[in-house]
Image (cartoon, rainbow, N blue to C red; front, side, top):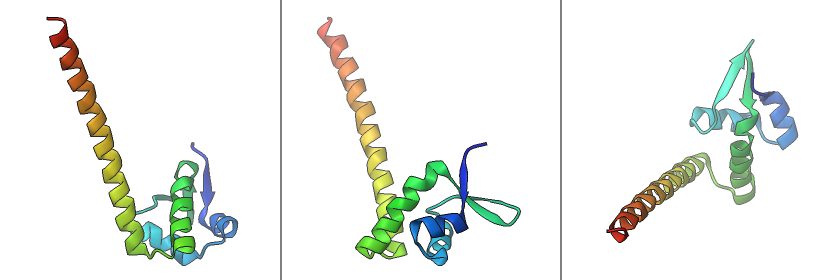
Length: 100
């Protein structure tokens, strides 16, 4: 099983409010696993928690703002990936015509 950390430990380590963590989960920004009534965050999702807490506490961005920024960055990354795929296809087509 992947490594995980409990919500209570995260609140202490990152010095965040437990309600902030719960709100991130409620907004769908973090995925948690619950076992024996203990909420766990997987280690691979720690980067997202750090990003959200920095935006919220350092830049004073509220939760709806976090959601908007997160969704827009995800869309931007998807567009970048799609652009890369299309450029690769275009390069392949271009290479075929050069051989003719």
